[in-house]
Length: 124
Image 1 (spheres, one colour):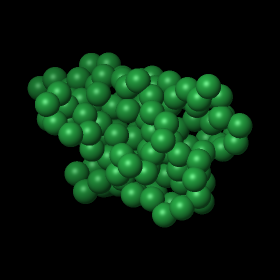
Image 2: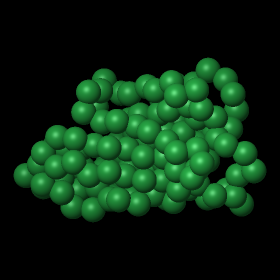
Image 3: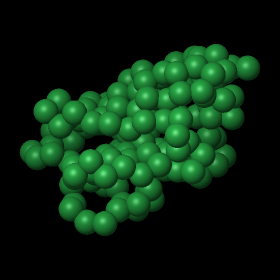
Image 4: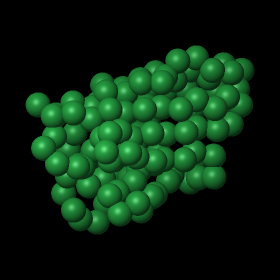
């Protein structure tokens, strides 16, 4: 059974720089692409950042230049370093992954496996 377990969420002050981790298990290979999404209650889940096995990275416009996505394939772990967080970025952050080697985007439809999410709360 594939499992994605996020960690590193919590409460931070405006301008804080937390790092999220996502540990993958139960997959018999290395995911081709892994990503971070976030969702605020009442709003659609949005793609934040993703990285594939060839180290191609994509970021949403709102986080480009402030967030850095990385992965450790040996550990099957995905990371998201977030900098200069703002209160409006308070959300549940989800890890997602897919094993298909194909063109991908920051769309939920491109990802098969999902974690349960970790809450990040940014106070002003």
